[in-house]
Image (tube, rainbow over all chains, first blue to last red):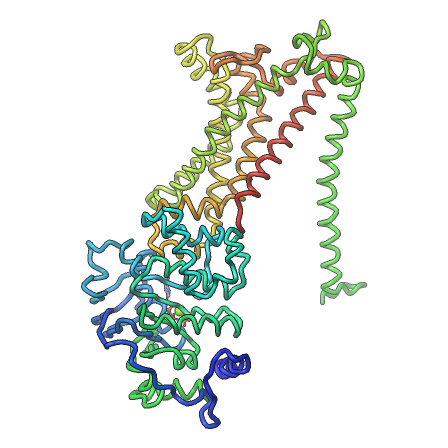
Length: 292
Length: 292
Ligand SMILES: Nc1ncnc2c1ncn2[C@@H]1O[C@H](COP(=O)(O)OP(=O)(O)OP(=O)(O)O)[C@@H](O)[C@H]1O
Ligand SMILES: [Mg+2]
């Protein structure tokens, strides 16, 4: 199982101090200090999304807590990516895509007519499965969002770039080649650059769609550690097929499932609930199915 | 395995055959270019020996009958007309493609594209005729005599605009959509996305379009012959008549003999040189601006 080997690989390399238990393939569940007062930041009320007339998911009511790391898991086609794209209205790009129901971010009604989409997307950053740095230099990748929002003073941009690259642990690797094309970086470095690019504008929310699945186990581990460190500072919503990873890093988790081709939210709650005492049979089956 | 009556042709042998055919065709194309260059050199050689290489640039004028062979006026004519047209058509063509891709309403795009394809297919003599009958008199009213560098630039611009626009269109379509999604997810405005990400990512295709435009502009003969006035002089302003290298060959080849004929071949050789220099220049610029 991929997740298990990842833990072991990381342990061997001393990257993570977690111990593995003989009884559970993932090791003992680690009780995390409550990162956050459970204060809902994102609230979905009976949210449904249709591509033309085909529903991707229906009737999702759910709250995502501020400052927490929330994982979305579930089988392929259950609408996880679709749900994520509602949060920054990337759904606007898909012709014929309709969203019904309520979705709010703080006081902002995401799908309201008068919502400023550019402002919304500044508040809600997104990381994709495949790292997608722009075909520009590393520096320009980070400068671009800054300039767009009026930060053009060279001293300030340089400072912010250094600070953000430090935050994602990339500064020491790239500090003397900021002007080389970003596409020359390794996959893991590219993904961390993309995270830096999203973080440099200090968004409230960070959406991540399988951010580690295109990376080798080592870079995946590095990126995962980085994501775990974002907890508290940002509200992170992460889609992952790696249950071990969800379990390791998330505070809350939810399971999406497909019923008759329509995605549904089956169960949500603290990771301890989802992984230790699942309330729903499907959750238990999904968790153990992947486990066995 | 393909079974034939007498031989058994394994897939790898079919493959080998295909490779040979393709190699043969590639060699043929290469040899053809070399043959043409060789032929030009052979025909131009007597002129260089008899008249002397430097005479082409230092003679008093172009009067082949009296033995004066200065081609510089026509080199300038060709260069100015081409540069003017490329400088006008490049931004216009790129704007047209950007409009097509990012701003035009959907119902408009296909008819518009078809129209540009049609424009690219109109024979140059038709453009020339239109220039002669409509454009030249108009310019004549503005500032006599009418046949002029300006008329040449205008016609050439109209002629190479569709080429550049179509190439730009194709290269914008080839920019991976992940860049676009990444930019939109960052909350970049459409204009910033186009200017800072899409256009740089499409540089390679855009410059190919410019190279094709340069080739067509330098090589255009008929239309130039019809609208430029064909006076052998370096144009000092936009309204001066002038003669291009190509028009010169077309005008005089019919009756040229001996040295004169060889001199015309030499001008053909010069044309080739100008094109090569321009292509190299565009390549150089392209290399400095791509980060892929
Ligand atoms: N642009 C689109 N147009 C039409 N249908 C789509 C589009 N994107 C997704 N779908 C459909 O919506 C459903 C949900 O897809 P979605 O990508 O949200 O699933 P997912 O849970 O992210 O799956 P995966 O785990 O494989 O990424 C699927 O049935 C898919 O075919
Ligand atoms: Mg997905």
